[in-house]
Image (cartoon, rainbow, N blue to C red):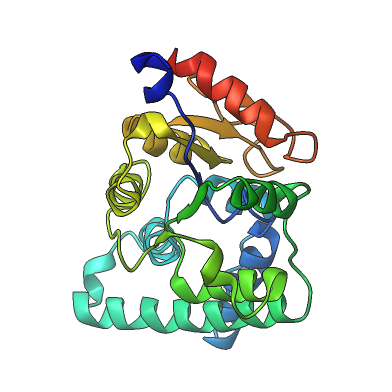
Length: 246
């Protein structure tokens, strides 16, 4: 085997969560609105507004961004009071989202579980690189895979480990380090432009599976853009990956 083919050997798949593993965004949007109502606020994020707000990575960051839009005189609250209020909102939102997942309102996207199983059986490593919180990941995958879901993943990067959100590549760089692999041995899976920018900045070839909230994004630079993973198998991934790194 030549050095170039050795360098291009696919050894790991790294997945984003929200919008990539599952169509979670409507459940997240409803959970945000539930939290606002619980807090006695008149905020309502509809689909058009939430689609725009998804350009901001991270739930707390999204709330703060919107707060600044509707409350330009943000200095009326001191920084700690604002942080505390946003943290309370986000905690209520997270609890509402977890409740929705546990009641079957969110499921994995087509082909995801099958592809993961195929990769694991072939000896590839799996990892997660997301800006969502650990509790959101656990709720989704515990419901979809089972209580031992963590055993399937060699490494997990999330909002608690990577505070600098996408499109910064921090979480992907952390996962490459944790996997002890170079980017040329891995493939990333994303659904958004922010995610694509983060993955490619880390040197990763990236498969995009858009969803209704991200279909309008610019995916220039993606290795492939496919509707979902239902028609994608490991042999195809190896072929695409090998051609990219040849």
